[in-house]
Amino acid sequence: MGRFYVTTPIYYVNAQPHLGHAYTTIVGDALTRWHRLLGDDVHFLTGTDEHGLKIQQAADAAGKTPKEFADSIAPLFEAAWERLEIANDDFIRTTEARHYRAVETLLKACYDAGDIYLGKYSGLYCVGCEEYYVEDDLTNGTDCPIHKRPVQHFEEENYFFRLSAFEQRLLDWYAAHPGAIVPDFRGNEVLGFIKGGLRDFSISRTSLDWGIPIPWDPKHVTYVWFDALTNYLSAVGYGQDQQRFEDWWPVNYHMIGKDIIRFHCVYWPAMLMSAGLEPPKGWAVGGWLLVGGEKMSKTTGNVVNPLDLIDDIGLDGFRYYLLSDTPYGQDGDFTYEGLISRYNSDLANNLGNLLSRVATVVAKKCDGIGPAPAPNSPLAEAAAAAYAGTALAWDQVQPSRALESTWHLIRATNAYLEANEPWKAEPGPEVDRVMGDALEALRIVAVLASPAVPETSQTVWERIGLGGAVANERLPHSATWGGYPGGLNVVKGDPLFPRRQA
Ligand code: MSP
Figure 1 (cartoon, rainbow, N blue to C red):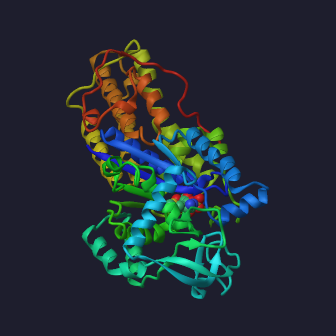
Figure 2 (figure 1 turned 60 degrees about the vertical axis):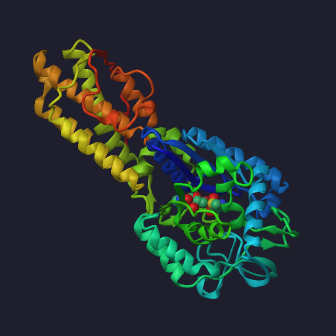
Figure 3 (figure 1 turned 90 degrees about the vertical axis):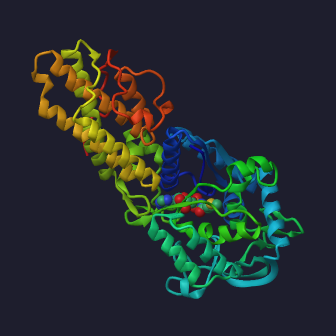
């Protein structure tokens, strides 16, 4: 038990929430729900990134001021997360006063440490990425490698952050904190960047006023990454409430996509070191969810709206698919067929079918009253293995493996029922024993699956007659064999997951 602080990236408000945003946010949500089950004091932060040229341009195009524009989009993210039942504890917007104060404090700390200096920048810039590129990075010598659009030539006086001074310190820090970046191969990528040599990066603009002024030279505004990354501090009191800040910092995990790994795993720890703050304890780096083999983006025009999918397949069907189908860290390909096929096989045929069988047999052979499990059930071992596997996987931020482990128990229970065929037997102690075991397995499944499919788990919980919220259960106690008391009303109800045609 302890404190567990997790963040998602803050999303740009130039686009509406899409499947890629939902993916990272749902993984963070499920991870934090798991930690709540462990009894941790959790703080889960998400929010929106509202400054910079990209937002200014989107606002211009919409005929609004940047603030008006941001005010029109940020609530769409809040509403989307509510629909997805994201249990965030806070939602930060970079236009809030608390964030301004934190950015100013961090800037001053790095400036006082001698790590911020004034210089001139001339280079090739991609507005989509809000990043300068060198010619070698470009596709066909002209285009941004991510947005596949020509970069622009910019020249201006900027403040720079002296990243080059942090090469060795970063390497030493990572050497002393193995496993801080999960999955491992993403950590190796970061070491590769650092060893490849670090260039100072620009942190201010004079050509723009949509941003936070540099406190000692207000004709400059802070540029996007210095501004955006600092949200993780602003939200827990940095520069404002020292006690609260010390309670939560360093963060346990920054959930991020691989596209922003360099900013989070190289720039950010260096900025923190400069200011005398601890680097994060961990980063969990996800791959891209591709649609038709391409990264989803407004520019590519292949954006999938998560809310449409929920209307179609249900919230938990959607969450389950995202969490189970792609090992976190790898790229995944979103397909509608894949969504339906996962839904049918794992949810309808496995979990849904198990609950429905159990409720039917209990109604017919046990007068609708769930019997207690046997202490020495053959399923007890499968349940212990499912718990151990699920816990280990969450510890490594691998939701797909966590669900696989939990689903082993569902499969083992279905197989146990098939081997014993209680539906063919006469009512009596033998049927009661088998059904008590199956109910106990379902109880444990409901607890273990609840971070991924909270609504479904609650329904299972109630159908087998248990009271209260499954989210209030505590591990490891609630996964220990024998918790189902017996003597409870078991309710048949509608199918949890009616089968779907592909
Ligand atoms: N505003 C910056 C992040 C600042 S964090 C201090 C930003 N925003 S973003 O809106 O472009 O999205 C960032 C994150 O959304 C990605 O890192 C990733 O986590 C998620 N995704 C956006 N598109 C995605 C996919 N197609 N697939 C998976 N995740 C994606 O960058």
